[in-house]
Length: 239
Length: 393
Image 1: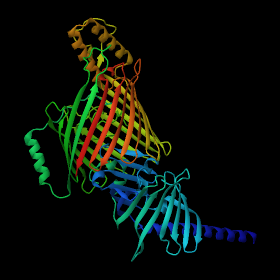
Image 2: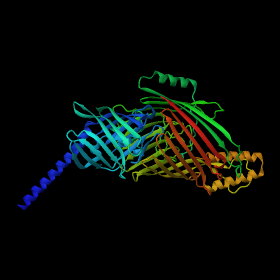
Image 3: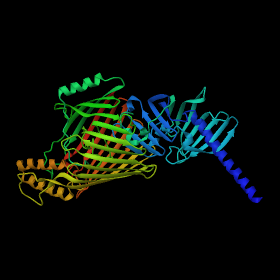
Image 4: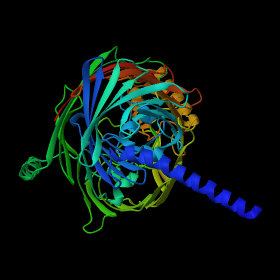
């Protein structure tokens, strides 16, 4: 009898754990789906960098992301033409046309820029972060996320979403030192398939005058050749 | 720090070739892109001291250079045509630094081919790169020219295999494998050019801020000039060099430390077995100084030649180090670097400067360079350089 109770308790516990894991995954998966499909995608981004109210620069990117934590970023602005960045999980490689080789960059180096390379390349929160805590406050749900792996730009993210739809409202990004690095607000549009992210504005909290608006121009499912995720392939011009 | 001692003759072009090239580009179809880059550099320099070296000294002088590059790209085809004038007081010339064709093999996603003159950087190092075998351009060259070659590549999930040959009189053929890991990248090379040569390199991301790397290369047959006079104080009718051919080792250790707010510190130390040793330099400079004291012009001319040949060595000293500190904040990138040649008395070369990206099409660089007052770099003195680069799309 005692063994039977233990077995039932164990099963119940395991079921709860599995359900909890599923629920955790689902929340971030739902939010990710507002930017990407579940399959390989091509995303066109426009990043506009402001100092105060003055537009400083515009950069256009094509991001090829697959479900396996891999992203290839192609810089499409005229002044950055030919630059490429490859993210393979924790591994980051940068290709600059003048250097003629892929440069392996450290986690710190990808923080550079208003919209850091990490911000551009990492489009799936569900793969990078796990939910540490949830707090519901009327219509808002606050998700406290912690890095699920090393090498991420931010160690901790506080994300506020609409409790019912999980539509993201705003977020805070913290460095490993605990310092608030950036805040983000999100512009969403309701389409046939649900909420879609149109734009994200990143406010730099270290250099207070800086902000970056990242607009998602198009998102489409694509088939990505496997060789595109090989760092040596960055040297080829066909990309 | 090149791996051998190749000759880099500019691929100066004939008019029919240039015309054919332009017609080919103009006849090409859509999705082609053009880019023009103009670079103008003006440099003020003051030579170093006259003692104890015998090279002729000028008080100070201005030197200007310019080049105009035209870059054409259409998917797999890449062409770079350049008109260059290294000295504004002399004529210019047209060269073709790069012209190549990059293509994936049909029906084979994992296989690719490159044909033509293309710059490649294989080594992981910043300044000293003994593993840049193909498409290599010397670090010391301001206007490097790539070597023609053919290269076949196979891409696997986390590695690449490459097989290539340079297209020249004495071709260098090599096989290379590089693999990419979670914290480690590594590469292994094997090649043949008048003798076997092999290379090995690795880089390791030690922390979120620190990248460590090492390169090692061995050559069975390496040609260099050896200083042949020991403790000689006499008039020489011939330069004190003899051609030698023997095996050679090179090795480099490097590290890069970077912060998230734009600071970067690079440190590298390189060793080349067949470079002039500290003892060679000591004897050469002693001989030059002794002959200088005699005050005869023929000796002075001879010494200029000898010292000039010494400076043509692929590395000025067996041991050399580089430390570079830079900071990137928006459009500004101030930097400073120090290069050390480990002779009996270390000789150094220091440069500090700033690169300013004015807008998307214009940048300006201002730099000051100072050479040690003693040793083989002494006569180079000091320089101030102002460079402007314009790019149109």
